[in-house]
Length: 158
Image (cartoon, rainbow, N blue to C red; front, side):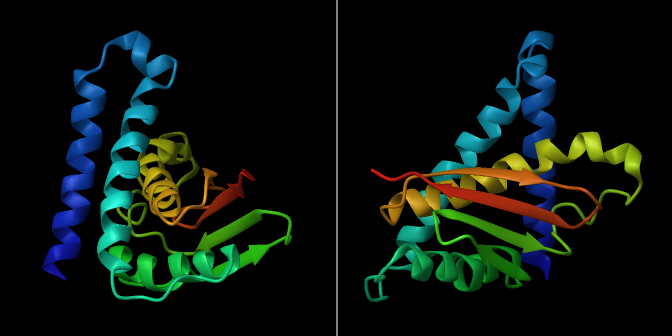
């Protein structure tokens, strides 16, 4: 429980630091979001190396996504993804109905505009993990009702 609180505090402080240290133009054109996603990418690469060192190779990308939703997500956020959907053509939707990094924000509509900065790190985390497993992807997040969110993973064929 304490490590979860520490992670949430660290995450919030990193976001505040990135936004306070940036210039006004960087906030407008999304450079802060990009910085947060790149941080998450690097962390995701390192975590996936550690988590998969003793596991067998995955047979396909669906197995990789199941690992991300169960083991990886549980290790980072202390719960599994609530729902995984796919169109079997390289698009996966991971739904978390109570995303831990959004639970500290109020559920009001006025905070929806702040949600992207709290999701950017996690998008990078997933993309970095997939990258180290040999899956090139684009990860985006969407929030319609707080604290639920959906992460869309588009696999890029090589």
